[in-house]
Image: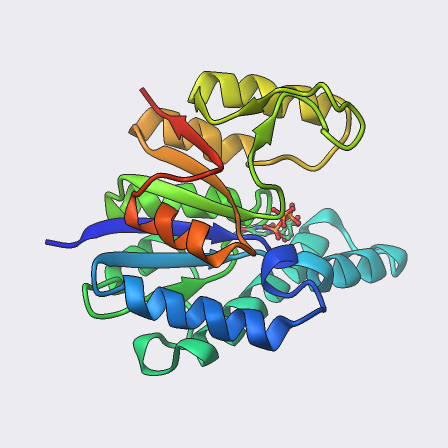
Amino acid sequence: MKEKVVVSIGGSVLVPGRDDTAYIRGLADMIGEVSDEVQAVVVCGGGKIARYYTETGGELGGSTFQLDMLGIGATRLNAQLLAVALGGLSSTDVPLTAEEAAERSAPHNVVVMGGTVPGHTTDAVAAMAARALGAARVVNATSVDAVYSDDPRKDPSAKRFSRMTIDELGSVVYKEHGAGRSSVFDPLGIKIAKEEGIDILIVDGRNLPELRNAMLGKGIEGTYVSSR
Ligand code: UTP
């Protein structure tokens, strides 16, 4: 039986607005290749597109619920774009819930999806999908190369973690939230991963060999967050 893996890929990684076509082509080819060995579900974030809609919707007086729904729409649009690149391996008719994603996942396909319901981010959806699927790990393909104790751009002495426990990740994220920054992983996703014993691998999503290693459970340069 193939190992099951869920990838949470940030919108800022998938469609930063530069080299998007070349990156998505390379990503889809890599996923196609590793899908010989692992059964993958890929959850896409909204990035700039989500931000554009939520900010414009906010200026127009949208409620929090409405803005979240706009964000979810953007994540699903990004998921459809990746599904186009995956061709016959995936479907552009993206599942709407984590449970539906797990039901549709099979050894011969790659399920691609975006958000589900208002109130969390796609990192939390990835943890929910991993729980529904019985996956051993969630790979967070993000725009930083590892977890740091502080923002390394502001504090050059910030500690870089190659390995940490899920409780340690929780404290870093809590600190980040306190400072009002966007978090390296959604706190709800961390809670689910801890409860379910799911490991989280934080890797630079633009580095495809690194992302490939994470999907295959090989050594990574990023941070390995162990759930137990
Ligand atoms: P993202 O998952 O892209 O959030 O969803 P983010 O915080 O911008 O993620 P990073 O920084 O790329 O990791 C975009 C927005 O869509 C809504 C939320 O408003 C979120 O901020 N959303 C997404 C939901 O309400 N529910 C979901 O399941 C997913």
